[in-house]
Length: 372
Ligand code: 13P
Ligand code: SF4
Image 1 (cartoon, rainbow, N blue to C red):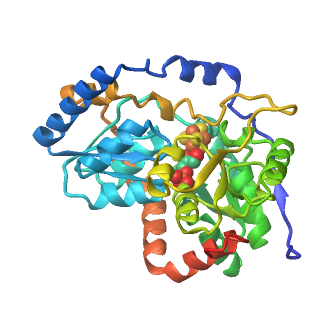
Image 2 (tube, rainbow, N blue to C red; image 1 turned 180 degrees about the horizontal axis):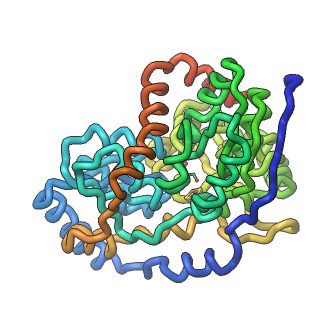
């Protein structure tokens, strides 16, 4: 580790308590029969054509919605790719199947498009745990720092930021800022912040937020699983605890994890992220064996079982209803939208112009997979 100062400030409460999670779980759609699914999928296909709309989906949502997105000219990807696709696609209606910050990012980038979401209450523990008022106070107290926020935040938090990053470009962007001598205020995910600090040596003041899904992965049980599968490669999303990241062969965004399975020369992969990703991984790497990383075991307090309750709110019924009724609109007040757009545009310009640095940063994530 480089010889630089690191500052942590854990002054603020995290909003990941049982009430907010239970409320989210209460809204998870009931499972549908094969017949109902087929009827709804046909209806959605017809409505997408009629409305000139596309589905922009995240890898964590229901596999049927991912398939439908791809079958109808839409998209499935990580949060950076979703933002780019929504901005660049000519359709005038984007149906964002993911969580609220993803819909907001699309709307910020494409104010003249309608952005609909199957359930507007699909939030994220990182977003909920970083309210704009407290965040602004935090920034005011540390006005000498460059403010870097993760995509998983509200438009109001982004409006205060100098940079927005996603898991696929965070390391490269903070590395560059650090090279320029800037001190960073980072929010909200403390594990990702800690990981970036450890990799870059940047001086980072870190908000105390966590993802309720990734925070549950358990190093002790992962170690036992690795002993049972000595040739398996371990793929970890960087929102996971440091001791889990320390065991990874690959640390990266959801897209980077999928690429690692496709390109890797191992047969078995242990996957530490939301289990929704397995659907696309199985399709793209059908001969590989995929094993879910443990959230349970002796040291478990399992709240999520690797299944994001907010991502799970995206059901076929809600998707069909929002297209039928043109409901679930994301609206952002224009002056807030403009303020929030600067940090996102900055990230998009950076990622467009620094593909080599991004690849190098990603290469740094990949320690021992054979495909690096
Ligand atoms: P990605 O940007 O890697 O898709 O991550 C988004 C997310 O919410 C992870 O929990
Ligand atoms: Fe937020 Fe975690 Fe759900 Fe991703 S998986 S949307 S970070 S709560």
